[in-house]
Image (cartoon, rainbow, N blue to C red; front, side):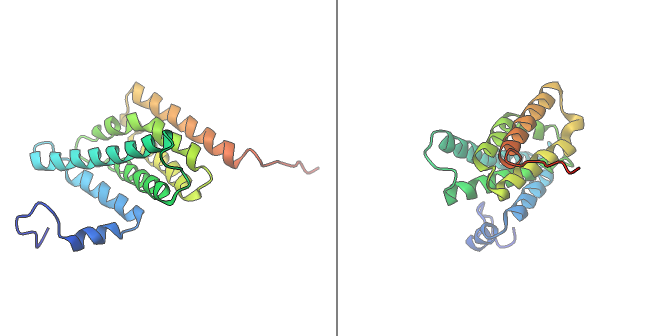
Length: 181
């Protein structure tokens, strides 16, 4: 970063600028960071990549823990914002298939897939989060299906089924199809 003068922390104005970015732009930044830091030979880059993935995972786990223990209600604005941000960060990881040694992304994503699909139970009525979850699973499958092993494929398919069941239960259950003669 220009103007850092050896400091490991970016200036406050840069942090505030990032915070003001829309979630989809933050997702693109995440993709760029993961692809840019994917060289295995560079310890500093590997450390940044690991820190990015660890940060996303820790934030998402705290959200899941708070929702499942009813410490926060899913309709509260802070929970909704956290869900949007976490899902978008996972979307950023799902689009990082062009990175060096991309198999690290399925290793990161696979344990979180059941929890990500479980968000649909809480947020099926929220079209913003619902659409992001559907896009996440689509992007991840499109980008990584060819490199997944058997267990990772099963985890993806099982989580996708759960995601679509929750979506369908909310969006398709009340619809009635009338046959015209």
